[in-house]
Structures are given as C-alpha cells and as structure tokens.
Image 1 (tube, one colour):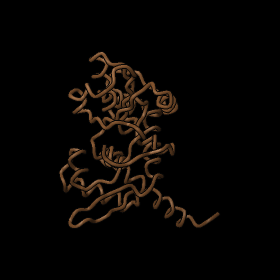
Image 2 (cartoon, helix red, strand yellow; image 1 turned 90 degrees about the vertical axis):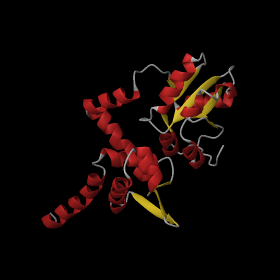
Image 3 (tube, helix red, strand yellow; image 1 turned 135 degrees about the vertical axis):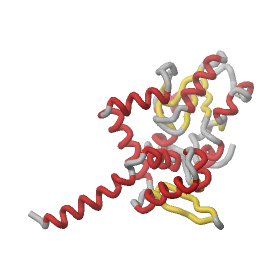
Image 4 (tube, helix red, strand yellow; image 1 turned 45 degrees about the vertical axis):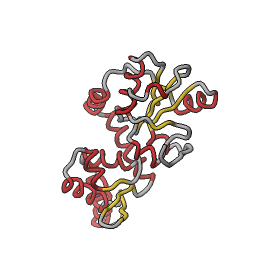
Length: 221
C-alpha cells in the first residue's frame, strides 16, 4: 500500500507548484514571460509592481522551477523554464474560466463586450495564404522582436491610430496580441472599425500560437 508518510511528502512537494501559482500577479508575470525573456525592471513596469515586490514574486516562481534567470552585468533577465510552464498556466486559466463563473465574469469585464469579430489560427493562415488579410501585432515592440507571426507588421496599439495610413485599405486587417486574456487586439479592432476599416482579431494570441507549434519569426520590424 506504500508508506503514508512518503505519499504525503510526495503530494506536499507537488503542492509547492500550486502554491507558486496561487497569486494573480504571479500568473500575470508568467503571461508576460510567455511573450519572451524580460528583465526584472521591465516586468515590474508592465505588471504595475514595485521592483521589490516583482523580485519577490519572481523568486517564488524560480524556487518552484517555473522560471529561470540569466545575468547580464547587473541586470537579471527572467524567462519561462519551458513550454510546459506556458501550457500549465494556460490550462489553469481555462479551467478557472470554465469552472468558476466569477473568473469568466472577471475576464468579460476586463476584455469588454463581445463586439469584435474573431477568427481561428487556421482561418488566419488561410487568409494570409490567399493574400486577403494584413496581419498586425499590436503588442509592444520588444514582444514583437522576441517572436511574432511570420509576415506580421509591428503596430503597437498606442501607435495604431497615427499609423493607419500605412495599412492597406483594400484588405482585411487581422490584429493579435499576447493571448486569450489580452485586451490589446480587442481595442485595436474597435479602433479600426470606427475608422472604417475591415478588421478582425485572432481568437487568442501569440501564447497559443507558440503552444500550437506554429511558425514564429523573431527580430525587430
């Protein structure tokens, strides 16, 4: 039947990973790291955290084996320990949304009304192959440089309105951002449609694209 003490020790060890994921801010940090390696400073700024608080959260994630580090001079850079960590975070969020109404309501409140048309990854690839769509990446430029959908243009959301003349007006514009919980593509499509452009968004984002093992390019625009 096995040693009860050792069985308890096993499950306690497994629970340490769950404890590391039991903070909304740590989940947000994992979402950001799924876009690419970042320094502590950059993570703190994007997540709206103080440097000391961000470092503490990142240390918890590191101790659980979910992230790794690289030192460059005095600067520490963090990255996910592997694609399995991204998959775990994505699955946890999916289970929360489908099993807890409060989580789904919170997501809806954040993303806003379901007023933007979306398409799947397969549909996006079909339209790109047919030449009937222009794909724009509305994440910050550093996330685009870390990895983006091949052929996508880097148009960060805060630059989109000023750069509208750069986008062809005779094809549909497909916007994408970080993942299923990212509001940037929703806002981009809303802006484009109010300016008279035909626009849709990818149903999820770069995180799910990577996990689906689809082609990824890196480098600045």
